[in-house]
Image (cartoon, rainbow, N blue to C red; front, top):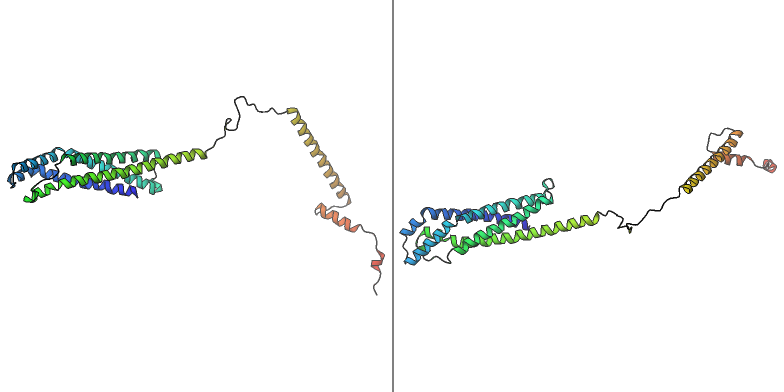
Length: 262
């Protein structure tokens, strides 16, 4: 939201700067001619008007600086907004940080240029309603003051967004470093004199031989049992089922179960 306001203020700085530029150009073209035919009450008023017009003409470069600074600030702010809002236009943070900083510096430059111009102008211009052209020239006084206030407001908002962006970037960097934990010898409590315990090769070989012997003995037992079963008859079903059937067939003869029932 603040960046959108910064863009609007920067565009306003450009627009008002163009307006002020047209007024200064008009003063440079026919200002002194109009002042010569205007009916002013005293020589002091004419001197004040001439001083005002000369200041406006001599400080034309300040307006150009303010226009250029406002244009760059608006461009940088729009680029940052698009980069943060659209994933496809996302720029790396090292590229966004300079744009944020230059946007704030640009509005600060525009504020300095417009403020210095507003301070150079006289406080008031008397008898400005004696001519329509002089009234249009006199608009430069409140316009320059509002111009400086607008540029200062944009500078303040731009600095706020820049500081906020810097703080968020620092927090993201710290969080990424905290999540990426890589255990080291010092982190595991190992000093530079720590040595890994040596394994007993002879003991491990004896254990392997024991496991091999036990496996061979189990294999022989299974083969003997399966051979005994095959001597009786060929069994095409699992061994456990065959054993149950053999146990069921080996029963004592029960003659009473074969007696006829009455």
